Length: 336
Image 1 (cartoon, rainbow, N blue to C red):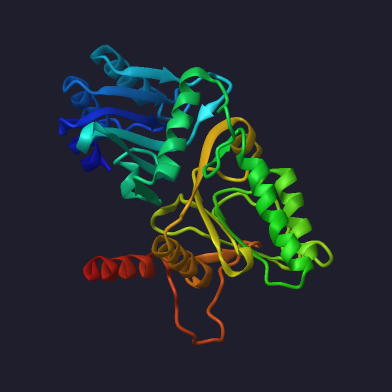
Image 2 (cartoon, rainbow, N blue to C red; image 1 turned 90 degrees about the vertical axis):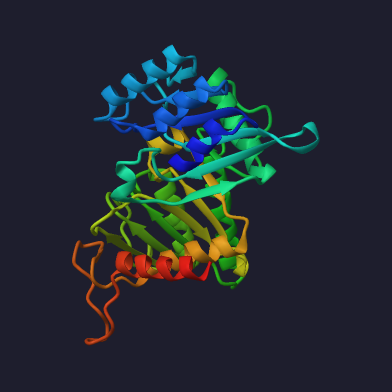
């Protein structure tokens, strides 16, 4: 991502760069690339979070440098964190047209934490997404809700919660019809009472729900008459599991969303968050493969009772998700 920013800063055809900064590295290559973009005459907009715990000093330092250099710096208001991870590049191309490129991520634009966090990012020129990323930046600028609800991005505090409810309701309807219905959630925390109640309702209807929760989980899985079809596991390994992924079975045509948002009240109602769909079948398959490694981990995974999950049956192959992911991605890179 830092290479993308450096190239955008140097590209004479790039006219504008907009980015959200939640945690900025002390010696930030990202901020330095943005400074270079300003110097090269680009219009640079930076949304800076002032309440990123433990990183306030670094964020303020780089925000002031960018502001003095001529960047348009937007400080988030006290009542609403901007937790979405977004980058938007505007470039002049053939026939006097402009094209926008977006990078949507689950991880902070911080090269230090990138070495120890596991995250997902999507680089795209799909106008369905770039148009709506621009709308999120417009909201950060003037605090006016989008004139029309976003069609593809799920954005808190506006459409994320209601759209998640709709997606779960669709799985419930499928289950009532006797059709396969499933939900897989990989998140850091599940705390919001209404979303927990909705998952209980899904379980009672027969929807199979798999939870992969790194930290706080306030739902009781496997309870008779309440959550019999819900399972929960967590994973803590060498690298911090930071990505959030929502998968809805959708009658065999899975919908996969990647997001910055946990299912906590603060994320759904009091922050700017984004969940983005994966339209490309190949990308969906890649993310599902990585999820499958976590679903079958029997080395570092633990269950709801915080007990490590042993291989079954005894003597079965050991699966360590992060190691399997690393080896799989190496092979994928060689094939490409």
